[in-house]
Length: 315
Image 1 (cartoon, rainbow, N blue to C red):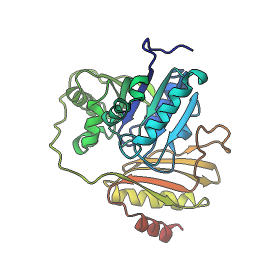
Image 2 (spheres, rainbow, N blue to C red):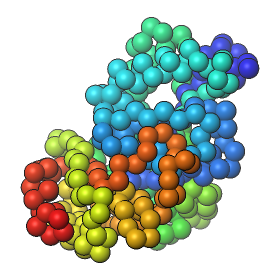
Image 3 (tube, helix red, strand yellow):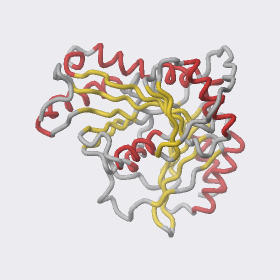
């Protein structure tokens, strides 16, 4: 199989965006539509418990890079994984790599990792940087998070997700804000991964304030048990997000219920409708789910206090 690039280097597409932007949903739709059909997909998660790979069963080859963001703590593991893919590309018929980053990744750090490695600098070329922006929460994230701005500024393409759920006037202002941050990027809209229309007409961008230094966002694990009751868990999680929604940015996990295994996800205070997973792991790409474990990403989360809270309520 010949490379898609004349110089023989393997093209790398970086798919980024802040926590909860919908990267896996968007990428799953792209794979279902036939995009990246001959690409290896690498899913990077900041937590030790991989979740997003459950949504990407259509990938030709899927690798999971967990327990460290690829732009910093997981940089060495990323470099090693990409070197391995380069070595196997011809044999495995891989024409490119798609890296779905964690929501905490700065694309510039990943580009620096590739450029700074003597092997990858000769064998990998960054083809595109695609940054997803949450159509519902993006304005707040850009106002409060320097990382969200860095992700938008680094993009060749900005994908506004959840466009059908957002108020159109607010979406128009968010679009104008992104175009001010990154005037050269293409801006498109999607709803659950499928193409959607951007709002018509001009709108005033949001004013983005100067940002002070903030505590880092870190992953925390909560073992709720494989037999945790769904009613108790949903009530406890809702109460937690109401009380700590500004600190708990993202929640992901798989729980067992009488209806089957449910994939649970939330962004700030918004809990997404649970998704029923297949009854076995035959169709799961990558590592099987760790049923009964939640991963919470946020600031100032005390893991011991979190566990005691759950035990008092539902354990």
